[in-house]
Length: 340
Length: 270
Image (tube, rainbow over all chains, first blue to last red; front, side):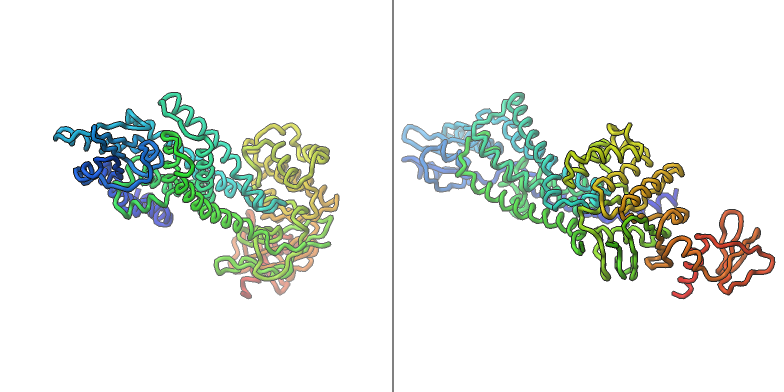
């Protein structure tokens, strides 16, 4: 038995990636997710308009952070994501319009207004876009993104690593195919499968969970394509640094977990400590989440989503570019020095 | 054009994987790279097809579209059928439908005609190797490089594969194959014996045997010494000075003796 233990220890010691996963990852996950795992909303972006705006603003609890807005129409302001809550304060009474697509923020706002009403400062509330504050309506758009990550990153990386392990990547490298033929040919099927999966998930979400889809499918399609470029790029990058399928799975999980927990899919970004929140801003799911929720629940116009779309495009350029370079290098080494 | 490696050197992790190796592969002939595991056979094959960049020397090879290659791991797509594997190679080489007769002919000589609908992953080792060789030969290449095509095969499959290589060479293709089996050298036109990345001997099997210096004697009992080794139930002793140790029976050296003696000599002089 001692021999068996010694053998196992030697094996694990030499598998540095697994060792890092066993020792460094738990500590890192605990620290990062400890700061991230919070449903408490500390700041609610609030717009206040109307003749009684000053009075209402003066009486708002500290959680409500008043922000200036250009429009007077609450639906438009919330749809564009300029604020989480918009209070229209008129002499007849104040009405707070709450963005229901930001679940925890909306619940926190509702609770605060209910408390204010109990203490004699009534403000009528109206939740827009997700009036029942339905969890599935908020989660399904993000889950669609998770499925795209699964196919884009995990399945793609496994597909490329499998080629290398089977010796077929060498075969491809010797064939008269251009690196871009191999690269595009390799990821195109995953792109199609991921697209079909996205449509199926959204359809099932609508059919089974009554998740609305009120916006433009074209805007969501644009966001999905950009998001897929990032995730496919991550998949190819993972494959170029993984020697076998086990390593590819480990790395894919390491990229998947932070996206689940730090992208705003479960915990609101606003509730996270600043350092951890910035990590969230580096993750593609953060922006896909914003786009998918914006389009599906709020009919957000293209103009209001330019920031997440642009950031996804920038991430896509960086990650996909790196993936192409590394993949080309893997094949390209073999192509230099050919003397016909 | 004669293809080959001219004084090719490859350094891997600070070690010499190939040291000034020369290999010639003439059209219509079979050249075999032979040697023990780690001798540098696969590295040389990889350099030949362009999978590895040499750190020194020169490579003579045809354009990629005229190279057929079978990697050590067979290089067949397990999830594709035999027919689909061949169809993909044909498409990658832009061969078009006119190659159907060639595909049929290759299927016939590899005995895979009845297995076209079977997944490559479900084939036996021998059948998969034959498919890999058929894939390498499909584009009618000027140079075919096969990395250990017979490793793990039963004697009949090995024999069939060699028949296939001979047929390809007979059609004018330059064939380069690596192998660990010394007996396969007898089937090749030219042999390059590699040991720890260095060329021990080159020429036809007969020429290599003829270049042997010294004598080989056999013994039924264990013999001590740096120049003695066991083969089967008997011991073989190499005497570089041409003498025959007392009490031992002198025999004609075969290729294995020649290669073993050359490896001993190289290590002594290293």
